[in-house]
Image (cartoon, rainbow, N blue to C red; front, top):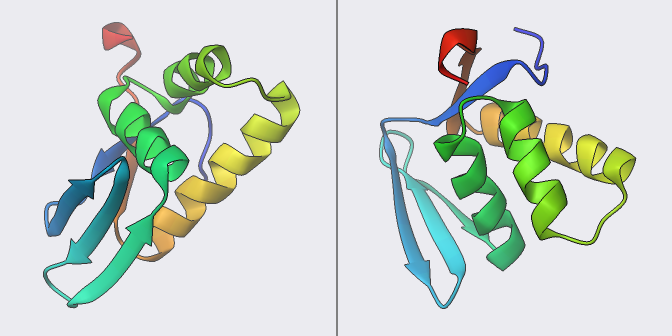
Length: 99
């Protein structure tokens, strides 16, 4: 599936997250792989998984961080691709009626 701003990001069911002082540790319970994230990546993950679409998350993150819009767009899509590659998140089509 091609990742677009209309897609929805959900945390995979087999992922356990533990936050500590803003950073987070993620464990894939199925593969036993461990990942760590800094405070910004942790915040991005929460905003992505709590938003109705990537576009909604993008707009929220653009308001929260002082960053160039194009740079955020590139970084956000790259971040999602990495999360998807390691099966931390699942990507689906957004239900536009719930935005």
